[in-house]
Image 1 (cartoon, rainbow, N blue to C red):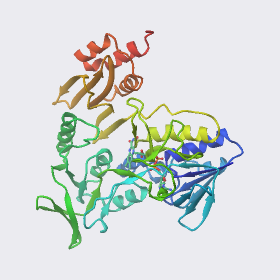
Image 2: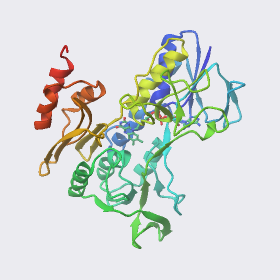
Image 3: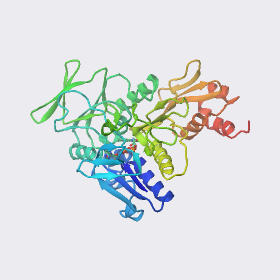
Image 4: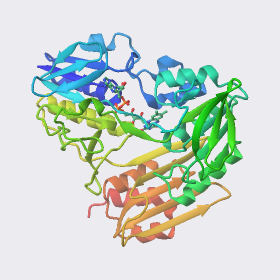
Length: 414
Ligand SMILES: Cc1cc2nc3c(=O)[nH]c(=O)nc-3n(C[C@H](O)[C@H](O)[C@H](O)COP(=O)(O)OP(=O)(O)OC[C@H]3O[C@@H](n4cnc5c(N)ncnc54)[C@H](O)[C@@H]3O)c2cc1C
């Protein structure tokens, strides 16, 4: 049995290791698309901060790991998939056969459609190569203009500031991390960042970038122009799907998969940022670009590829973020649900905020800022769809009772 995995991020690596365990005699090939050993993007903020060296980003630290498991690493990019012939053609002209295929190609930064994106000094912060380029230039006083303040835009700030750079962030919508936080939480994050010396310009965006006298000029929508040494584009991500055009694999926003992580084509599976699976709370198909999701899905896909039935319980949407030392989180239906109820705790002076969203006596979503010790309990209650009973009113009265509610309700025998 020939197993081919496209993509060597967390989803691909876990899948390869799971396959080896479940199928000792199978052939396993892992395509690495960036000319790097398999690594974790999640570690890049620590690399920027100087807390780890490049090797610290590698998913497996032992140089012989893949060889020992007889997982063949191939440094090449997939260009197309022929589902009838069961082959994948590569950028270097080769073609690899497969019996079972896993597509774990992740996502990439969305491209801003403005002039100047190809100039030297214009970067994203997504790959190890991006991190190297930023590290080479980011020195005390280096002027960085960053477009976007989503999850990645926020998580890299600490690493950038630790280099002594002068950081300006443009936030088009006016709200930082608006896809995971309500306006109150987002406003608190903004105040925190400004207090740490980050300049934040809201309701504006770059219109174009030019190079002049050894520096970049970032033209803003309001007519102003900002000088910069680095322009960082962080406006979102898109799944890597283009090479599948015409393959017959059914695509929505990502690769549409069933609970076994199989696509519409038997024998072809998808996992991680590129897969569009059902949400475990609302049942809707969606992308969920976080590492824990990639790992779960990679494992489930591999078990099924090896002939061991396993089902994905559904994506659980949550984000836990640390922005310049301030912890924040969002879970499930953090915006609330029609007919639902909510409870809120706000302490602006101490940067502490919690909002809980209920549907009946279940907690279905939450936003927090400044709390880190409630994360596991919040996740447990929301993902487990735990009936709170009398604990609902207690949480409405005092949202900080989360841990007590979890211990009482999640472990009660109804
Ligand atoms: C700076 C940063 C910080 C992050 N922090 C967090 C965090 O704190 N928590 C969290 O949960 N998530 C975080 N993420 C997101 C997390 O990294 C992703 O959700 C995770 O990497 C998804 O894993 P994956 O295996 O699906 O895809 P990826 O890790 O993106 O791996 C995909 C692989 O496929 C390869 N590939 C793509 N196209 C091809 C092709 N055509 N042929 C061959 N190979 C190809 C790529 O080169 C890559 O090796 C962060 C991301 C970044 C950039």
